[in-house]
Length: 232
Image 1: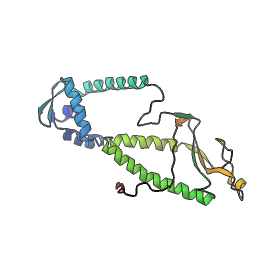
Image 2 (image 1 turned 90 degrees about the vertical axis):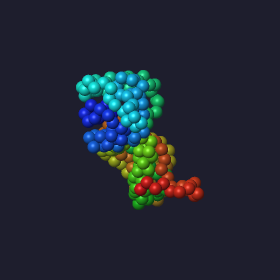
Image 3 (image 1 turned 180 degrees about the vertical axis):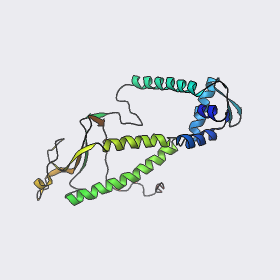
Image 4 (image 1 turned 45 degrees about the vertical axis):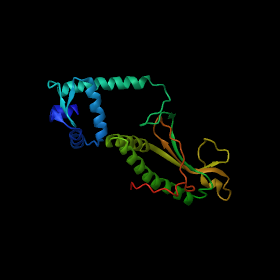
């Protein structure tokens, strides 16, 4: 908002800042986030002041964009220092905290879900399309919570860059006592089905990656009396 006040108009409303951010920076910012930022600046007392309900004015008219860059740089350094002081293992909203050395992405299914190459293909197709729908639902929730489009795109970009670093893949199965070992060719299990998991390993060309662990499955519906989420 200080950039808007310096470049465009000394008097402004939160909506002016939102429109400016969309047109000039390609960012979708919630009015509430702008209002919160204004309140923080008002507490400082020497940068902006309230002149009418919903209207604010730049106090220091000698403030330049170069001065603003200096202020932002100092704020960024304070933020980085605060992050560096946080104990390892503390969760972050934008990046999983735990790291894995020599990573591999493992998409595995139990025999009750997949007993053939065709079953495996079907399960992976379900995961692909279901995760796309789930991603839309989560991003709609994030926008309601005040996340900017820039932040959401940044998270997507980091995930895409990770997956684009796949250098090899293996299709196969774990024996009953396979543990974390490599997948064995499916031909070894034909007619026996004595395996613990069937799936695909995507081997990454990366020294480390965030650990991602969870579950995807089709189960009994616990939401019978609720309305569906209309975000698609």
